[in-house]
Structures are given as C-alpha cells and as structure tokens.
Length: 399
Ligand code: 3PG
Ligand code: MG
Image 1 (spheres, rainbow, N blue to C red):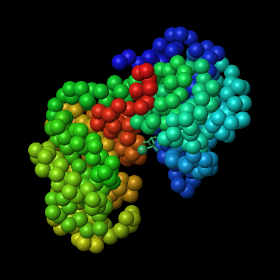
Image 2: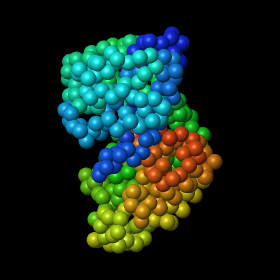
Image 3: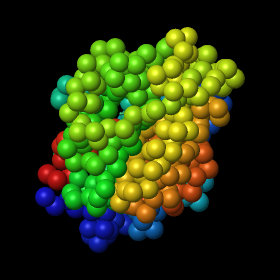
Image 4: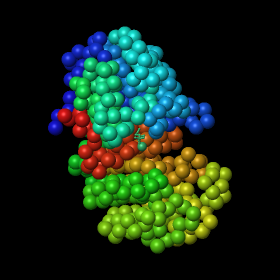
C-alpha cells in the first residue's frame, strides 16, 4: 500500500498554504516545576516542521499532552512546549490558548508564510478521544478547517483512533511526515526478516501491557530478556516468592503458560536489588531471586543478571529494547537499565530503542544516542507495530 509523503506535498508546492501537522509533543514535565524534562519528541519533529517553514507554508501544529479528561486542565497546557519549540526552530511559535476556538481561529488566520502556530492540547476537547464517531467527526471538522493539507508526524500516537490521528486525514489531502516514515521504515525491518540472532529486551512495570507483544514476538525472536517490574510476575510463575515486589496476581497463570511455551527463549533475572521501600534512600541489597526477603521489594535487576543479559546481547545482530530494567530515576536502582543499555550500544547489532520511557532513560543516563541504531518516539505505538496490528493513524494515511 502506498502512502504519500512530505516530499510529495513539498513537490506540489506549499508556499502560502496552511498545513496542519499532527505531532506527538507529549513530553515529560517535572511535577514540581512544570519544566520539560526531556525534549526528544520536540526535536524529533523538527525535520518535518523545518522543511515546511522553509517552503513557506503556514504551519499549524497540534498535539496532545498527558491525559486530560476532555476539558481544559492547566497542568497539561502545551504552552511550555511552544516556547521550547520556538527555541529549537529559531523562530517564535504562535501559541493558541484553545484548540479550535476563537484564539485558535485568530492565531491561524494571522499566520504569515513560513510561520508556525501551536494549538492548545487536543485532549482539552472531548471529541478528540471520543468513541462516538459523530462526536469525533465534529471535532475533526473543526480541526480540518485549519489546514489545506494534513501531515501526520505523530508516530507516538498512530495507534490511537483519535480525531486528529484518524478522522482529520479523511477530510484533507494527507501525507506522512519524516518522523513517521523513518519509524515505519525501521520497525518494518524488525517485522520483516531481522538478521539473527534477534534479541528483545522488555522491561517496565506491567506484564499486562506487554502480553500481546510477548505473544507476538515469541515465535520470531531468538531470545527474550525480561527485567523491570514485570519480571516479578514471571518469577512468581516459576514458584518463587517475590516479597512486596510489584506483582500482577491475575497474570501469574498466563506467565506460567508463556514460560512453558517459550522453548527456553525467555531469560529472567537470577538476582535483583531488593529494598525496604520505594525510595532512593531505602536500605537495599542484591539478593538471589530465590532469596527475596518477604518485607522487601525488587527495584532493579542485579549485576549477575546484567552480565547474563549482556552476554546474550553481545551475540545479537538485531536488538529491540522497550522498558527500563529498574527504577532508573533513583540512582541506587539505575545500574540495571544502564548496564543493559550499555551492552546494547556495544553489541555489533542493529538496535532499536522503543518507547518514550526507554528513550528518556537513554538520555537521562547520559548515554550517547547515536550509538543506538534508532530511538523510537513511540512506546505503545512501536509495541503495537511489532504485534502486527493495523494502526489507525497509518491506515488513515493509506486511504
Ligand atoms: C505516548 O506517550 O505513548 C504517546 O504520546 C501516546 O499517549 P497516550 O498513551 O496517552 O495515548
Ligand atoms: Mg503511552
């Protein structure tokens, strides 16, 4: 199926035309100060925005941030993002105080050629995420009125059947932006015929979030390394006691079943860092997985596990990593994530880091981004892509 691209749109000429760009500017904010803690997703759309600006388009950018409930909520305002985007573009970004109201209309109407506007958070409007087609459609009509053409560059949101992702492209000439194209090109290498051994590392807190991708990946990968909070449900499934560690009781049976069917491909931790409490100053020790004290919780994988995972990764020719191995935001529990990330950079492999959190971890730990093959801006989106699901945002571009 062919998708038209930004280059096709640029070739038609966009000077003086209004181009509505759906971006994923859902960046992490500091809870206390509201400052942007990682601007990776803003930087990721610069190639698309820069090309449109240079071609003289009137660029109208829209995005969600966080999960407000369909009504304005100041803690989720995109205003700080407009500031940062302007700094990175080297030109002011005109910020609209609402998404499709008076402020948005006058901001868009006032744009000169080559200028950029950012609309307020899409999810301040119930129509954006509504399951009701008519409600979504009505909101999509209002958004579509701001563009003569539509560019989807919000890879992190292509798995959402939301108005700005799914319904707007049905109303305007539509193309894929540079980021969406690059992401799809890279991820399709993993679903096609990846060079072997193909090793996948999964972490993060919930097995239930990863179940579908584990099911989909088991037949295709050579090794599946599991760390992070979700490893404890697997350890429990092996009959081990996990103290007060994160545990999804209703997933234990499923994990046992996956382990049975995994042909020995699944590698679990052999040691973990267990702490008295979920706090950076909590007393903690490295323990074997069969010796987790009943009052303690595991907050990272241990050094022997890191060594085992690193050995498996050193053999790999293709690597996909999603989800931190421990609570890397707290220094005493960052070694597992760091160790695995470093092993990935050392491997002579094509490596893809999937997910907002893992990508943020790479940058927060000060690792060199260029030593990874590709750092995806999509968490849920990259997982659903690997599951082989049809993604609403991509399907909409194909039509
Ligand atoms: C993400 O952070 O995964 C994307 O921005 C999508 O956000 P959502 O999970 O709230 O839809
Ligand atoms: Mg998400």
